[in-house]
Image 1 (cartoon, helix red, strand yellow):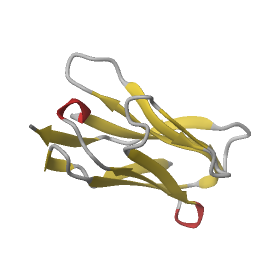
Image 2 (cartoon, rainbow, N blue to C red):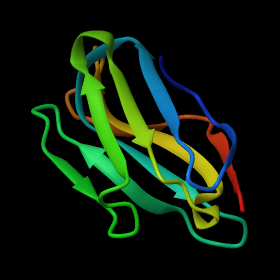
Image 3 (cartoon, rainbow, N blue to C red):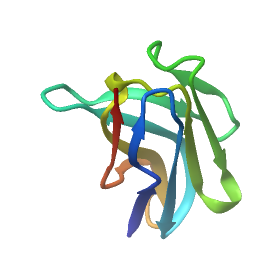
Length: 121
């Protein structure tokens, strides 16, 4: 009923930039928080950044000052602009959104399939 589709991952050299996008589609009534998480090999999935439907943001300390999260509510899309990338940013990046569908009274978390970001040194 709901799909989150990420795009924009790839291979980049250290110091470079990438912009991730995630579009939500389906029987959506409303979207609350949207965010990005990442999981590196052998590590747990961790929060990168989140943004509320009113634009309030929160970032992991490791990405503050380098990454910027934004959203376009009209397009049900969240973005992650990643600058000054480091090899330690290498991970699969997952989009997450708290969504209320047309069939629910409550909001539930949905995940995208993930997009690989690889930063070479």
